[in-house]
Structures are given as structure tokens and as C-alpha cells.
Amino acid sequence: MPAPIAIANITDSQQQLLIQRPAHGLSLCGRIRVPGDKSISHRALMLGAIATGETAIEGLLLGEDPRSTASCFRALGAEISELNSELVRVRGVGIGQLSEPADVLNAGNSGTTIRLMLGLLAGQKGRFFSVTGDASLRSRPMSRVVKPLREMGAQIWGRQNDSLAPLAIAGQQLRPIHYRSPIASAQVKSCILLAGLLAEGQTTVTEPALSRDHSERMLKAFGAEISTDPETHSVTVTGPARLAGQPVVVPGDISSAAFWLVAASIVPDSELLIENVGVNPTRTGILDALEMMGADIAQENLRLVAGEPVADLRVRSGQLQACEIGGNIIPRLIDEIPILAVAAAFAKGTTVIRDAAELRVKESDRLAVMAAQLSRLGARVTELPDGLEIAGGAPLTGTEVDSQDDHRVAMSLAIAGLMATGTTTINRAEAAAISYPNFTPTLQQICG
Ligand code: S3P
Image (cartoon, protein in one colour):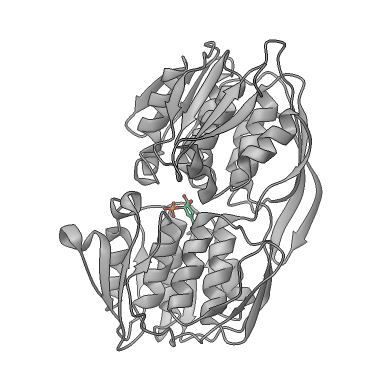
């Protein structure tokens, strides 16, 4: 019998992941760790690069996205040691002291890299920068950050009315603003707060719902003056700020843990312990949603590590029930909706996910792609303008599916494949390395 999980190299850069469900069934068990949190990894590199002194980062994610951030900030003058998950040392240049690189800055596939970096570049007086990314990133909306940055006095130009990368930035003295963001987006909020570090006075961002607050926490730890108003979802930074390098410990990424939480919930007779997972309340919407669905997940050994809450998550399989989600929970599980759709395909009843139109402008149009790819496997999924409707319980049959170069789609389809009969082949599976380079070995480990 072929190995239940195998990788086929199609070209030097393209891989297929084959998931073969054994005839006698499968159960998942073991104790695992997930890689470092992607959002926190980006921020640790960036704040380290603009602080004075040294920032020592433990547990950095070695995915493609943080690598893009590291290479951009090296080009901007920061000294960043070779990336590894034990210890990365960053020697910063000081807040308004990024140097003008000789070439275009390339953010690769990473929305967080380009949008947060734009906030920092806009205020580097007298220097000129150009930024770009891969085909996916060049199609993602940048006006959401260009518009508020311009209100602060930034000079930015780009394709299609300055809304798409490549973008050109001429650094200026910025002025503080109060920005009322129409979307709950941590990338928008963080971009404006980082720009606010260089503006004189108070820069405030108000969001319609609270998005992840890693920037606020880390900026405070680095010495910036930050105040928050939880009632109005507002954050204020006072500039000009001075940041001092700090030790950062990056917890495991709950967005990566989500694949195993769902896998162990839907594959019968499974039990997994996922150690050292970040459980910042702005990120735990997936735990709340799975709890609503009746999943058996316990948080053990809850502790605070370098300003972020961390726990070990124990998950056991059980029959899931459908749920309806929308509103303020959406920003708290925005990246987990693809894998939540997989959970819903195995739940009793019809799950409805709404208010998630933002998924259309992620690394792919995740609503369209998940609806199409899960349907290919036999799931009953209807695409809504702002969400998905999934009638659970349809049997899945292995076939060829495609990640559309989206890391979270690739991994979600692999988990669906564990429960499909026959062989599921995921094309362009190498995309997983954006956020989870060891996804396949870990999958093999828990299936073994
Ligand atoms: C992120 C914010 C979210 C999320 C992304 C990471 C961040 O994007 O989807 O994966 O690190 O700030 P939006 O701000 O566009 O919602």
C-alpha cells in the first residue's frame, strides 16, 4: 500500500501533496509544536529594525513571509542575523534612520510585510523607496493604507490610481491623524500606528471591531507611548517615539494550530496535544467557533510569555454540530475560515459564515477558492457574497484539487483529504511554506 501521505516534486518549485486514506481508517495522535506566530514574527523583525540596540528573537517563524520581511529590512540597513528558530539577533538603525536601498523592496507574498513597511517608509524624510511583491500581492488592495497615509502627508504613487503595488514612496515629515478605519484590519491599524511613531503628536486609529493587537503590545514593550480604548476599539500612539530593542519570545501560531484542531476533531479516535500556542484573545475566535460546534478542546498550562498569553491545547475527536458565525468574531478568526469550512463539511447541519468579504482580498479569493475546491471533493458548499454556506455530512471522495498558490487553502485541503476516500492530490502544495514549512512532516508524524 502506498504511504498515506507523500510528496511528489512536479518541477523544482512545484509540489503535489498526496493524501491516501487507509481502508481501515485513520486516527491522529501525538504531541506536537507549531511554528512561531507569523504576525508576531513580522513585528519582532520590524520593531527590532527601527529600535536602537539589540532585539533577540526566540521562536521566529522560518516561513517565506518573515523571510521577505527580513530581506526588506536588511536592505533598509538593519543588521539581522541568519534566520533560525532558536535565536535571531536584530541590530536596529533607530526610528527615522532607515537607509535608502539601491533596489526595489520585494515583500513576496506577504501583505503584512508590505502594508506595515509602508507605514514606516512614509516618514523617512528625504529618502525614496519602491516596493513590490509577487503576482498575488500585486493584485491586493493597497488604497486601504495609501489613503490614510496620504492624510498624514505621505507621498505615494502606484498602479491603478495608486491602489496597487509596485508603489513608490518619497519619505516626508508626517502629521498625526485620527483615522476611523472602515474595516477591522490589523495591517491597516499597524501601518498607521507605525507611521504615527514619526509624526509629532497623537495618532489614533479607531476600528469597527477589534483586530489582532500584537502591534500595540509589542510597541508598548519597546517603549512607545500607547493607549487603548477598548469601548471604541481605538489605539493612540504618541510621536515622535523612541524604541529600545527588547527580547521577544514568539509563541506558536494559533492559525497553524487550527489545522490540527480541526483535523483531530473530525478524524475519529484522535487525540493531539499542541504545545505552546499563542492564545491572545484577539486571535482565539477559532477556539470559540469550534467550541460552539461542540469540539472537545481544553486549554492547559495557561501562562504569559513576553506579554502574550500562551497555552497547550488538547483536542479530542467528536461529532461537530453546525454553527452560524458573523460580526465581531470574524476578525478574530479571519485566517482560520478556510479550515473552519472544512470542519463545517463534517458537522451535522448547515453552517453559515457571514461578514467575511475580506477573504476575497487575501492571498487568494478564499471564499471562491474554498467553495470550488471543497465542492470538487464532494462537499456541499454555496458561496455567499460575504461568506459560505456549508451543508455538512456529504461524503468526500479524493480527487485533484489546487491551492491556487494560497498557503492556508493548501493546508485546509490536506486536512479535508484525511477524511476523503481514495487519494486526494493537492496541486501547488508548496504554498504551505509561506506560513508552515514543516506542515507535511508534522502531518506524517501524527498519522504515523
Ligand atoms: C495580519 C492581519 C490580517 C491577517 C493576516 C495577518 C497581521 O490581515 O489576515 O494574515 O499580521 O496584521 P488584515 O489586516 O488584512 O485583516
